[in-house]
Image (cartoon, rainbow, N blue to C red; front, side, top):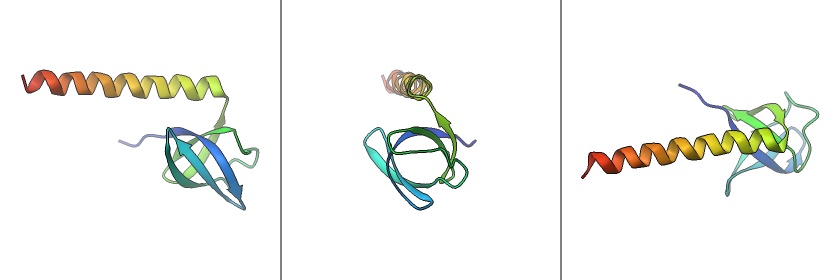
Length: 81
């Protein structure tokens, strides 16, 4: 299963952007989203930004990821009790 993860662009140098994923930064190729700019949110899959998101869309997706992580953590804790 593959996931695309939203992140915020911190800087762009040519076709490469430094993207913040909640405190972890990675490089992503932005050639597929020429409208991407510093401070915009992008959906990144396999090292490529594939879509520009507005902040509300990015936050909604990140919230769902956090809820999933919490549910998995709770399930793991119940399994060890």
